[in-house]
Figure 1 (cartoon, rainbow, N blue to C red):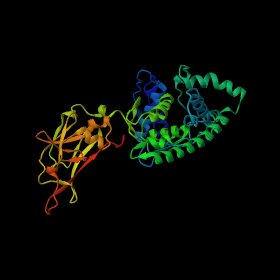
Figure 2 (cartoon, rainbow, N blue to C red):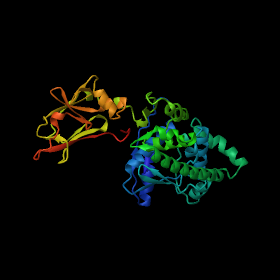
Figure 3 (cartoon, one colour):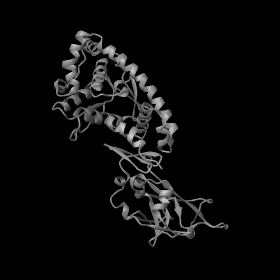
Figure 4 (cartoon, rainbow, N blue to C red):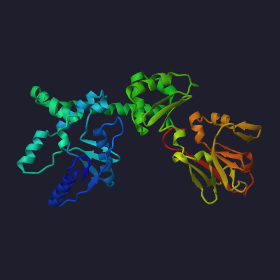
Length: 398
């Protein structure tokens, strides 16, 4: 595969050259064209790399692996860049000979090979290659290292690349151990998709931070910077149980409710689609499942042990969301909806996404948390029964 970033005037010629080489080798060649458009504050290098791997991954079939030609010198550059970013063990482990890439294997078979060895091999066999002129642009950090720093390092320490690769391998081993410990600690503190604050607070601070890093990564969220991680592991977990603190960063936020730490991306109110709070009519006889905003769904399924009397339940039902002040018709008077949600452990910021089922304005059911007694299946035989099911997105956690 050849990725055309469209960043150089000659990029189309390079793509044609790659296709011609593949034709001579009698192998197929896929040209993938991408658009690299960094937002304000983003690095062109980082965005190009992200979009390149996204495009390459999209071309892979199940069971296929992606091979790249990273060399030992690339490893040294990656390690030095990680040092300049103040990275931890994960970043300093640099590149592995084999790593995961969106469910596929990413293989780097030339990682033990020096770039000079590769160049000698190519020249000895009169092979052609394309040279990107942007590799000479020292405004890019990697090029500056390659052209200004590495020659001086090698002049003093000729084996610099091999030594750096050895250090990266040691750090990769340490990172694997940290991940195993983080996985074990997260399992110990797990409460569904959330973590129990009381368990985290019983851990030493370094272990607590490691567990949080693992858990945040497992939720598919971007990693917070060190300042926010310190805030999460310290003040956020040490706050009063009724404080409901929140820590946000680009693409994610953590919220605490009582003894539970939950991750959302982004905040639940922002996930609701425009107009979701206006509600919709649900003909549950024709559609057993109703899609809701943010990837949630509400279902009414036949179940001979269910608590819903399908014969008495109105159809269609109006499905909308909480606005504040709603009351439910309970056996002992009218119950504030807020009290029900609080008793069921629904965090304050999650309550806006709890679906309400209404018949002519009266609340018939609250998701699968509460059902009006008038529509409960009685003990007599012959009653058609059903059960409400509320599916929530996998990120977060009730």
